[in-house]
Amino acid sequence: MASTQSQSSSQGSTRGRSADSNRGTLEARVTGSKIETGLSSWPECIKENYLLVDKSFILPEVVDNKGPILLTRPCRSGKTMFLSMAEDFFEVPRGETLEDKQARYRDMMVSAIPGFIDEHCGRYPGVWFPDEAGFHDKLSDILDNLLRHFPEIQAEIGKEVDEE
Image (cartoon, rainbow, N blue to C red):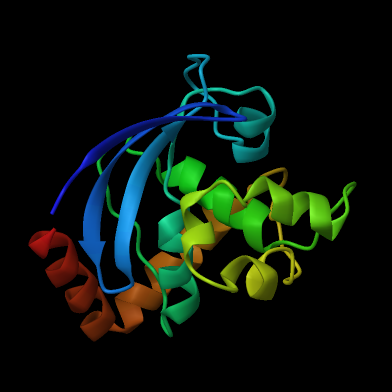
């Protein structure tokens, strides 16, 4: 079932282990050659060839999911980096051509899914909410109020977190 592979790419060494999935066999990859900590910008990590785990195989799950997605993983497990990658992948290109953006993902795991890059990469407008005016605190208050008024949602979220 699992095989370990080593190969070289234009971005540095690539090592991985195959894993079964409902989409076929996917290979977890580590790309890049420079070590850096504390970064959360996927495009910067790719450009500077920093060591990172390619989790692009999760992007089709985001597209297929018809409801909200709750990311509950331990600290330092790549949640922010995954969101940065998803934003970069889906968002309409800024300061580069669509072809350049799509080329960045041709060596990634997501390229194993036929047509996915051409259909989804760079095709959606992005929305960014900087925290300049305390937006995130306000959003947190809104979510707290919603959960208080809809206890069944709060119970369902609690149940899912407990199962994790």
